Image (cartoon, rainbow, N blue to C red):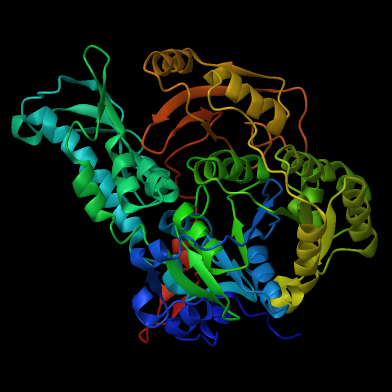
Length: 559
């Protein structure tokens, strides 16, 4: 039996077209793009402005069941579906989130699809790419530095050092930085205080990048970031520190969408937003809206399961951007469903109808959830060789009973060819089932009511508990007039509940909101639930241990 090549080996053998040619496929000239080498480019803001009056194409969202160690393949499916649509002679662009260096070197290696459904150049995308995350990190840390400098230089704004809420960020998994004391070493080194680091992709600057629709909108949102409170409880913003202009300058290139391609030379935008459990978790609004002006069909993804990424896509991104998705693809595997049904990872190769039926309840809930937003669903079963006919038929039949179309996706092994069935089902659904998209809640409702709606309708929780700290924050934000912002829930991706061990479809549970944070610039309130963290740590054996480069510059282990 021949050895199956790794993702990076497949990517390294790709026959890429110069990015200028990819741009021409979607009607962009060489003057419309800014080259980052031969195979990467950014779309100029002038080109984006010129496209504004064009009609929008159809928007296709790809989401998934709650992820498991068995794997689902959401990004792989997004890429393969786009390639499948292209093979059906459709004008299509795929819009993906950027991988984060922290997890790439910490947990799992690359995040640009897999097998024969990838975006390339894979190594560049998984590394520094076009420097967007570097810009985010520096814009964020500039503001953090200006806060501490203000304290040092006389504190004219009367900032209470104990109420500085704007932490620093770095794009690296590093638990040792979660809680630190800064300003030690005497008067010349600043005002000592407790602080800490979050991962760059959890930065409010990242959320703002993903939700801003122009450079000036970016600046306006930066100006609203609340960094601290005064001794008498008044919010202090980036505008008060006069930081928004310099922050925007650092982000002037980062806001432009990145253009790359799939293995099959389908145009791809890779821009912004990886983390749906602690941030926003979707491709940038600028990239998605630009793609809708350039293509008849746009395939995009939202992070993690539909309870996180899809809910944020609908309730935040679509609300802010006035987007109307035509259809949602929910990715599942028989293996993952059996894991949700209680089967250990080592036993997933064996047929187990009882576990499959039990685990299917997770998929059932996600189909129900998508329906609550008025969007028709198509289930993509990501195929594995161990799937039996009986297991596949069960999933097919149950999906049909629930009113969802279903297709077998073989894109990992076959690329676009393996995505044709899925592409046909998606097109059929768009043509026959109208989307009546609506958000889940009115943002003007009180904070607790909005959280309760998400917890009850999307997670299936009985109710919501709040810590005393969260209660205080809710009272404060209500008093300050921030209560009419939508909600960004920070929750484990592994369960519908806030307990990652509760797989399948948990029932009779409450969720606990332990902290509520204000992201005034992004335009939402973040509710942290359960044990979710904004700075991950490294596992016992980080992915970095397996990543290497040889004398010729050939990279290995970034899978």
